[in-house]
Length: 82
Image 1: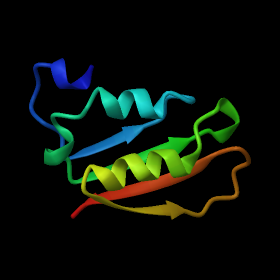
Image 2: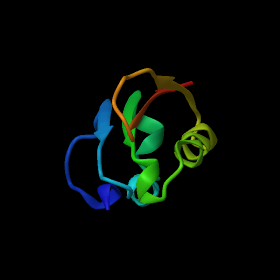
Image 3: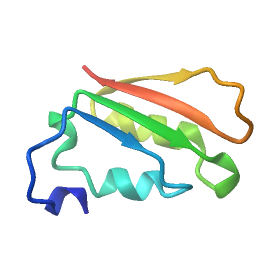
Image 4: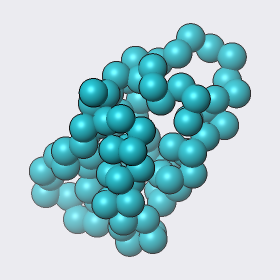
């Protein structure tokens, strides 16, 4: 869990975990309020809908936008702390 790591709190986090985005965000619950920006690569073909990740980030206080790409089977989200 990211919440258990003994390190300075990050300002920016990039998440690319091949379908485990929700679990990773669950492990960051304590420090998410201190993060300014998150980049999340979502892989819907692995069972995690980008809307699910977006909703989780919105509920944590972030504004979320999808970043356009031409990559198949990948969607990128940027989340900025409100």
